[in-house]
Amino acid sequence: MERARIRKTALSLAVAGAFAGGASQAHAAAFALIEQSASGLGNSYAGAAAAADDASIIFYNPAGMSLLPGGMQVSAGLALINLTAKFSDSGSAASTSPAARPLGNNGGNAGDLSAVPNVYFAMDVAPDWKVGVGVSVPFGLKTEYDPNWIGRFQAIKSDIKTYNINPSVSYKLDDKTSFGFGLNYQKIDAELSRAVVLGANVEGVAVVKGDDTSWGFNAGAMYQPTPDTRLGVSYRSSIKYNISGTVSVTGAPVLNGDANVDIKMPDTFSIALNHRLDSKWTLLGDVTRTGWSKIKDLTIVTSNGQPPDVTQENFKNTWRVGVGAVHRYDDAWSIKMGLAFDQTPVNDTDRTARLPDNNRLWLSVGGQYKLSKDGTLDFGLAHLFIKDAPINQNGGSAAANGQLVGTYKGTVDVLGAQFAYRF
Image 1 (cartoon, rainbow, N blue to C red):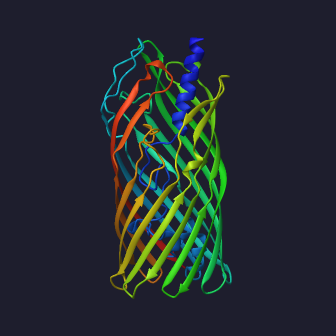
Image 2: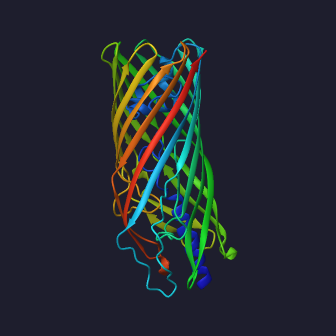
Image 3: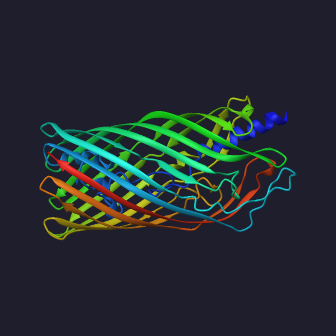
């Protein structure tokens, strides 16, 4: 009976932690990544769904391909995302169970430097028709605590990656209106770990690995009421995963087993504006709603015959509002700037060590240099100010897992560059 109880704890808690997400690398709220190009980074991605600067518009609004110059265009970029996330203890406690061990340290900097690449291609196929494809990373995280830290029963390592292939098509109805549609084939890989109690003063580490593939879609439209004003609307669908994984426990191979969980990634809807004031200045703005409320809880099904384990998340829908400007300095150089407010879906009651997320404020600068009539180089730098995030999380049902009580302080810096060429 004791072995069965420990196995259930190792499986259900480790897998629940694995698929609950983690402290994201810079980005839109929670573990969504908005850094799908560098051409929008300098503007904090304000007005992204109304832009038509290069082939990366495939991700933000496929209708924008209709506004690209004729022929073929390719763009490739890389964003370096540096997350700092540090926990300060303010009353964490271990259980009074005889199995309890010392609390441990504060975990160090759980953040890390991550590289987020992207590549896009678009071309004409017929009058008023274009096709394209994008490859990017729309969701991801990478965090790691010291294995002996206070919250080791909540999380040690979190490494989640998604890969998205996005074939798209656009149609130009007339000089003012265009439409676009795309399919998204997406793969998710997850590797996460946490400590588990194996007996009195004996701990192990449960490592969960899981993956799945699934399909979604994106669609959009652009309308240009005047030569200087362009409106864009864009929608990206939710994607549902059935993630199958395995759990292995160091020091107790008998506890190894299978686990799976269903999860829906959120959908997004954006309304964007691009307005040219004069020959030197262009203003940008957008509002984006993300449907995080689809994630109410995570129900974990394990292979040990135990009832499903349910972890409450209670995510809320979020809003992101951005404003930006582009100043054309001369024929070769443009200067970009932007500001955005990004809500978190996480509430103070249900915040976990895997996702100590909170509201953030974007401040960005960047630029574009025209290498030739056909080639451009974009670059940008953003700093994200993240509101301090309180946490009061129990380690789960195991008696010795204790309570994690304290505050997270975090910041994010993003550096991106992108090369685009048409031929």
